[in-house]
Length: 266
Image 1: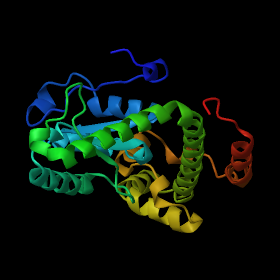
Image 2: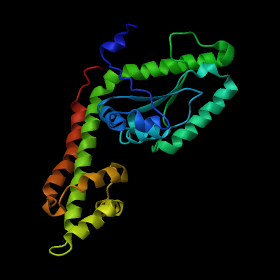
Image 3: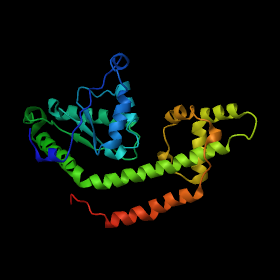
Image 4: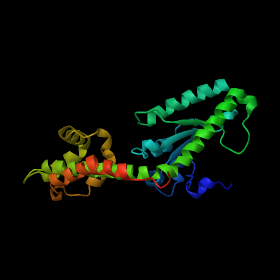
């Protein structure tokens, strides 16, 4: 269906999330890896549920975990909500929030849009007049959120740049810490393996020593896999001047840029 919004926004629909044995046998590619790649490059992530399928399968959990670091982009859509009456909808909403609370590691409650998002009229016989009005307002809110994507794209690009700069800074601190912990002569291989095995504890030391936010640190298990292919002795030492340059950029240059930067969609 033609819509002017599609001139500025591209929708990418992922394959359905599988459950049970199908998760292992019917994927010929890294599904969560592909999802994570798209999450890093998109402006908005919609997680779709319907009242009769609220369970979060193992694969869906892995998908949601792969979205960490992009929590501000996530929205939840409870679709086909006119298939249940008002009392059932309250129970469905509560069950959905409980399920999401176990897998979404966010300090704020995620926005949930409730409605029947298709080209058919709302089933007022099930929802009643109050439910119909609610669904129409929710549909307007979701459409408004989608229309805001082009307007907020520039701000998101800058936020993504800031996120990458902070990640690079923490990466430098971690690498320098691991190099410093290595012995000068004997037992290098054992020490390196011990550091990898206790990587979560080493992250904690780096965080406390440099007063860094824990949410900026990379995934421990993924970082372990990467480190296993490197020799810690060959890591670079920390260059304080470069860290200071990043801090100056984050503390002064970016705020000044935001003051003078004009969003072309405004």
